[in-house]
Length: 459
Ligand code: 5AD
Ligand code: SF4
Image 1 (tube, helix red, strand yellow):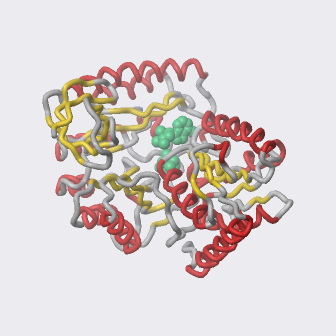
Image 2: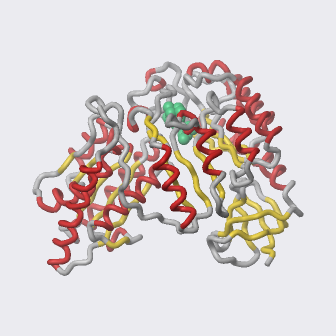
Image 3: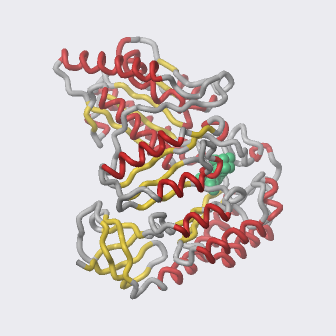
């Protein structure tokens, strides 16, 4: 089965979009779309494409659900907490729909791919008009048209059994939220099957965009003045086009223009020396490496199916420190994976101390239906997970504070967001006075906190 959506199909969607637009024009209506996005950058990127398609259908954008004629909830399934929050917020839209019955409410993204969630939506959320999976995003015009004309509720969820490879849709319009920061997906899906993770089940198999399409998109962004470009993939190192991932980075970093190039996310088992060497070879590539370790215990890593050891991870981390001494190193850690003993958790603590991360995204393990870890014995009680989480946060705060203090007195280049901005290391830098957003500015660092720096804008 071909994973690439044909140009014919995209053109068909554009025609449907024109029909929807005409329908609203005839009614003299200016409808509005509100898109609520949860989860990772991939979802944010998807929402920008959904917004592009909704605008093509004649909708204007609103940031207020109350003003909307179409609400799209783009969901995340990575942890149960995120799912419960999303369902409760979706529940809140019931009132809006009662006041405005012609309003459409749709739910898409990773939760829409889960059987138990779809069942729940059908039985308990009758005011949700359509539910569609991540492989159906490019069909939004059809979904809107059908929802406007059908009494029946719609489900367009792609059946991963029938299309286990997932799809790639090129040439869909995009409405980016920022005028200077952009996401560029290079690959989709994941084949790693870490035992705690739902992503391979909801996002399908790994698939890569053609490199020419990626180069064209990046070059257009640079021409339009974008300054911060992030290449996205669940596991960017698995990029498998006619370039390797380091090759892709090298080529893009050779493009003319004043921009920073980032990537997200890299798997430690594949983060090669070649990639780190490419980073060191170009100052266009941001000095930030996000390398999720998840645990410092070899036994836990094995049961997570991570396919690297603590020693291998440390080797990579130290190579990054050696080749990119000015880079920030950040990571993800899961506290309370099933069967994680106190001792094994202490291995994580000691790894954190040994590496000295600039920042850690710490998560309480959350059991996900359908994953291997959900079936494991010795699920850790919530209280214990929280205790470990708090201990790690305290330790990390001290480490990050120390690292950030080493910036005091230095002048660094920051991409302004107005009142603050981001350094090459992706650190938040608070300004002493506002500076136009989307511009690079030199800032002299005057104070440090665990999660941010303060500085004087030098003009
Ligand atoms: N429970 C807790 N955290 C999880 N993550 C992924 N799956 C789970 C889960 N079931 C975390 C991992 C991953 C990050 C994006 O989310 O740390 O790197
Ligand atoms: Fe999930 Fe592992 Fe794939 Fe990351 S690499 S998306 S944690 S299965």
